[in-house]
Image (cartoon, rainbow, N blue to C red; front, side, top):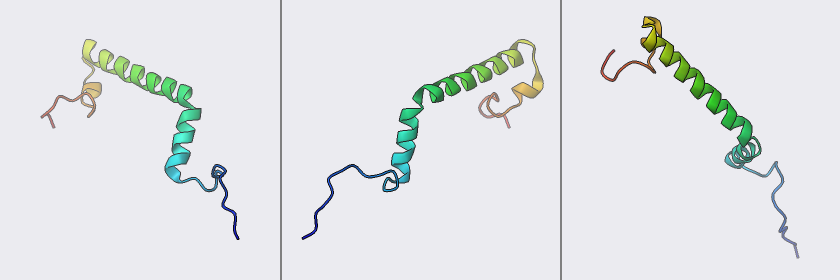
Length: 69
């Protein structure tokens, strides 16, 4: 008669999505700070482009108005 294990799966048994969730849970502070840094950089870049009318910044796809190609 075989015994079934009731312990949690080892890291090798976990799927890719579960490993990604574990990584995000363990590093949520660092990931949040990285997202905040990227957001502030893009906000500053867009502000500089608007205030000083820097055309190459305004032509980036992120800052282009809808409908302008």
